[in-house]
Length: 194
Image: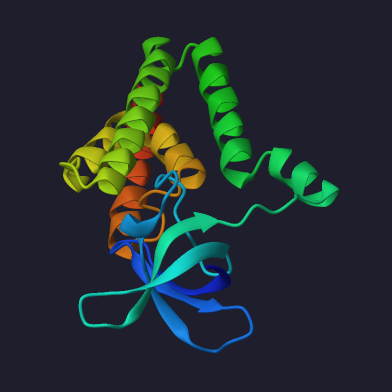
């Protein structure tokens, strides 16, 4: 029999957490490998899931054949999700600033082309890494992701973190990512003054 419950704890880096079945207070173990559908959509605290209770090797009940509950979006939720977020607005502003710098002949045009190319590549690398994580395959090293950001792929990395919800909650990764982004921006500012 299918149960329905709310995620009360989730560790995305380890791929597990706990769900509480509606009408009870019992915490049930939940693992990403037990999701029956797309594992690219990661659960978060507050998500409503459906699942079958099954015993594990030690006889404890765990959530199996897990799926996200189908919920109708309200009109306000739909309109909110279609709006541009802070990341998108900031990146559009950054793009306009770059275009202005090229127009003023303080920055070579290939800088914009480099940002676009590296951002697309970086977004695809993040997507591949997220898919590999969900499938239990070989992962892209974090150093590779950080070097791509440093070289100019940080806009694509930032969008990937926001839209794919990948590498967005790991504090140590975020610290290095924003440092790499700052170094890249300092380098571009220096280039524009030469």
